[in-house]
Image (cartoon, rainbow, N blue to C red):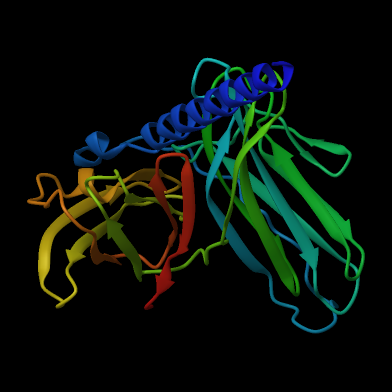
Length: 303
């Protein structure tokens, strides 16, 4: 009898965990939905502070290189039941010790001054990580978001003078017991794309769809992004123009961006979205959502 009671209790805990994971993932999916705003523009944007390094005298590649994390979820999006944390592992793959610098921003391109991130044992205040040394073959870990009171979306730039390897992942955990519900890795983006493609896998019956995040990495100025949804035969199904101010972050689901779409409720369809911009200043990532499962896709640069 005791074993049966324990089995029932375990099943209840598993069910509760699954329900919370689905609910939190759904809320994160809602959180990246900003399509309703895409018909308008933001006329006033603060000029971003830029990370700059002195790369003179650095062995190997002496040019400053920059990588972008276009989507950084921080905190809770379901009233405190679960929390999202973003972890960024920065590896110095260069030929010697070197410095890196980073800037983190809100969705409108202003400095991330409402969340404190950590870099190793130090804090990142107002979204600015000043020049920080990493030994050859060493690692610096940047993280944040697990104890935030409300959900916040951010994005970031990380600059170095030589080899720079980034690994970024999102963790979704139960806030009360720190139980891991899901973890997904996302690729860093180049900061200067003007044309790129993301895959789209859609299954109406299960809710499977691809969401994506875009950033105009320019400090100022407008960029017009044209998104084309194409089918397996290369036919254009729908087109959408997206105006983006300098520093601005946008995110959404394919089904909402191009709505209304005539999609069948049976079977899976394979499509893709091609983005073209008037300015070579875009960064992007994509995530597929189905229930509590998240899968990342890279934005494949064409130019």
